[in-house]
Length: 478
Ligand code: B12
Ligand code: SF4
Image (cartoon, rainbow, N blue to C red; front, top):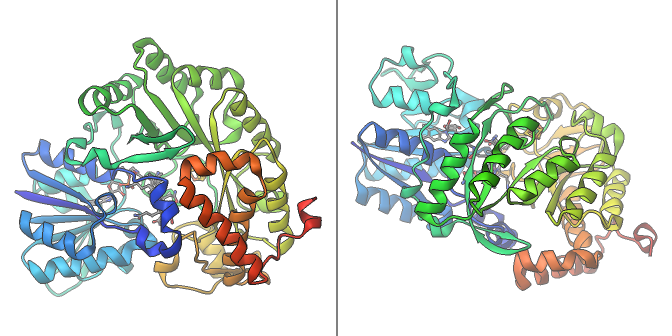
């Protein structure tokens, strides 16, 4: 049987700032590569179309799919771009009504029946490799669980809870040979690198209120370091990939697991480089040293906000001073370090935004930062808080296509309206770079001269429009 797995283009929705999203790089759809590997193992002919990396429109994707003439089309979707998946499935059904359409991913996992649009024949809920294998083997749905489908009378039926893979070492190696691997590059302070993504672990035990962890849940499952390093070696030798992004939610969650992987990388002398994200309180000098020896080039931390009450409400439970310490440490070992912050979290006021921005503008330890707008993804505690209007939150935009993070805001927080958060984000993003010369170099290396110019223009636009609420000389301390 022929199967098409589709990842539609999405950055175009960011309009004027899509440059930054694209310049930051294209990421391979690892989910589809896992599902493709299983389908191939079951003897099917599979294609993966990555509309984002290949820069193709929905209509082109429909044409390509029609040309391949699959019996099954599987689409992956997150909340803000789910409407694109619906549009794509509808168009495919128009051209080829007999094709079976399947939707999977975080959005349908949380919303289930509510998002099970007519254009999809089946919805896969949660972690899906086991369900997918059972589906392709035509096992009875009640046996495999994790599927939504319709009875002939239109009634939606759930086949029961999805089954997680107990031992994730049983997963196949993702079918990267079906991807156009030269398309996947990352902008780093070391220049642009061809890369791929890899997971050493699934799940996260923490409960940050804004984070959607519904697919893999809170129990963590680790792969054997030997398998991880074997996959890295295969990518290097077969596909000439020398840089790896570890997608684990919290890379150093299990210190010994990280050390074991590092030891193997060092022993094998693979010469590859890698990066990932973790919590600032889960690194120490000995570990960092080992990670650097094993090829670590970049680490990301979620700093979010400097306000202590807000930090408590969002349940991040990492003291702010740990970020300063962790950044000092990574700077000492020459690791590019990225700190992501959010505005619009519960309890946010103009003053708390100013405090976070002031901290970012003044902190020389923080070489790179990013500001996104808090989005209450369905299924998160933040979403429930916004619905219940707690901590000054109010969900004012209910259209999921606006649940983006950049240039869009869907919640009001106290007196801050969505439009205030958007202009604060514009101002913040520009100011933390423009007024911090020690960040210029990395901005230019990562976003190019065009990106640096856009950043400057963004700030000038705020100043011209009189929107500089968070930027006075006094606040800047100059
Ligand atoms: C890497 C990553 C990215 C990469 C994208 C990589 C790519 N090409 O796929 C980048 C950086 C570009 C990115 C962007 C965004 N991301 Co992101 N991202 C992740 C991250 C860290 C890993 C994704 C991954 O590969 N997981 C591993 C695979 C195996 O898991 P999976 O994708 O869930 O797939 C499994 C099931 O969902 C299911 N499945 C998925 N698709 C399909 C399709 C079919 C047909 C079937 C049968 C099954 C199925 O089966 C898979 C195997 O079990 C996750 C967090 C996480 N832990 O998953 C966040 C996450 C997916 N991202 C998230 C968000 C919000 C975004 C953005 C909206 C942020 C933004 N910039 O505005 C965008 C949206 C991009 C888009 N196209 O939709 C949220 C999604 C929440 C939600 N409700 O949708 C997550 C869950 C983070 C979080 N914890 O909140 N992201
Ligand atoms: S933000 Fe990170 S640490 Fe917090 S729950 Fe999500 S993945 Fe886990």
